[in-house]
Length: 172
Image (cartoon, rainbow, N blue to C red; front, side):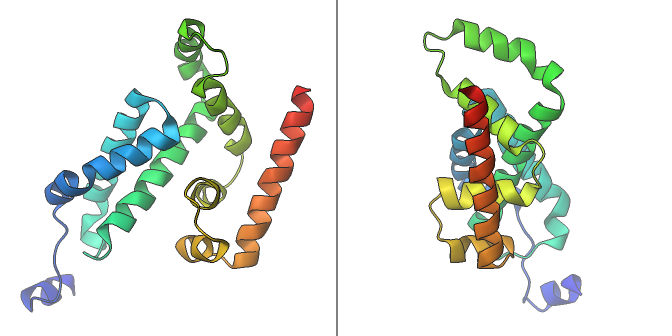
């Protein structure tokens, strides 16, 4: 069907190279903000465009910045989850980075807290938290973006806050 639409001039195939040139800086900023690590952010940016390349035949040329923003968010959250599942891969590097920092309250500590907080949560919970709490989207905008009801989004955020409060209580 896409081929017929394309022949009729009604569908335009996604040009990944063009998207990379145009939206690459936006994707990189997103990855840096979520991962707070330059090397991980570069990997996440590349993974975002690899995902786009793999799925380009299934996607429509509509709202590319929103699409890439969401793919980048999910890639970053998956990386955070992966670090939780395979701590042996990152422990030595993370310990070396923490030891080399002047302030122990660096972004590395924040990243560890996020890994613990989101480690066993569904991917959608992380997406909801980032969209609402980091990006500042309203509950309605967040719900529309992830395909949930407003009450579902509110419940997930409430559960995260409770979990964070429990984590803070354990730390005291």
